[in-house]
Image (cartoon, rainbow over all chains, first blue to last red; front, side, top):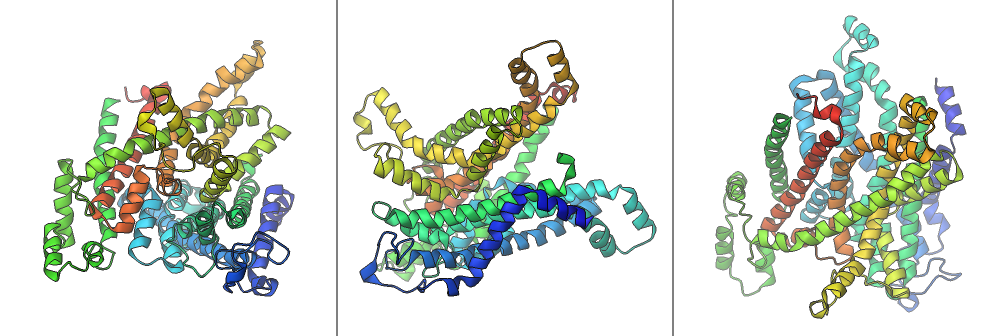
Length: 276
Length: 325
């Protein structure tokens, strides 16, 4: 079954393009300190707000820092925030969905009503509030994005569980008097893995967009640490004179998010043969 | 059927209580008191004055008492007064809400105007170059950071070309303009925010229309329509599209929270005088009554949007309408 999936994956252009870009990004993020000649935090006031040139490929910012170095180091922040936040959402969403779908009854009702409430909120309002009230830092950003993005996953898992619960293999497993954790994790979970994987991959792109918006508003990753969003914020301050501060970090976000979305859509085609 | 909707309406009440409770709970996370913002700014404010302020706003009471007080006032549609300028919260929101609705409704209309043809074209010419390029276009819209697109649009159309204003909703001379000029002025200010917002919101609807139409086209009654010799565009636009569009109505309900949520960031970038920016400023200033007000109204808009989508769904799909009878 796995070799078949792999075969389909290799033939899927979306999935291949997405994973190729992502592999490159991960490589860039890991090698960032080796690749850049300039420290992303090194200020040089004489060289401030210079347009792109051979020595500064993406120009310099208001403090004379090399924008290319900052964008490259920003890759680390975005990838880590996106993946960890979605990891957290996966953990909460899958557990909630499994429990609600497996037990049904009032447990199900409780979870679903809670999700209804949370989904009526514009998530960004909740996120802005929490971060502004606590402290804007990367940990808070990751946690709050994770805490506000598990609901869709939970609904998905629950829906799948409800239909799987009645299937023969589940009745057979129950007839064998297997323990509940075993029923949940060995028999149910693997069967909901595919759609969850697709949704999670698409979710990483969304989380990266949210982080960049927060950092842009000054509520995310704090300067001097470079994040794509906070470089864009400087870009807005110098919008009249320094277009390069706006162009490059945004392009980096676009490419990264696009890569995750391509991979997610590709995985959907690969894992769900019904679409053929 | 009316019973169903009555039930749905009734269900809004616990939802609303839940939502306000969550908002209120989150506000309790903040260390210190919101009055610190007022008193710390003003060196002349004595400890005594600070105490008075805390008493005045009821911040000395335990949080559940504060929430209950808020809920009681809310039931009378009294959202209290802003901590910052002491003006009634409802009036402050009332001034800003039309601008937000104008922005979001315009975006929604534009999304429909663009996404429908894209979806139809992609489905009719499945796997053609058209389909592929449109898919890429929509995909980019889905992946592009709004803040960045907004900045680029401001730089290109506002600063370099000088075609459109980059912020606000009205020119300074708005009051002296004729009605026609006023409309034009509004439209020019709306152009960039609406275009950016619509582009980033295209994906959901256009993909939905494309996939829905593809499914419908394979149905027997479409073959029948073709077999009796109807022209292809009539088959697609009249027979197939109608059935595809039914579930699309509910999609509007799902788009709404995204649009309203987007307003908080959008309006801040474009210095747009809407409710989103009011909410953002209130959060930054810890203006509790305004935060509660904006949060509640935003959630209420979402709920009403979903409810209307349900009603519309029942209206366009007779199968649902007659189910209750």
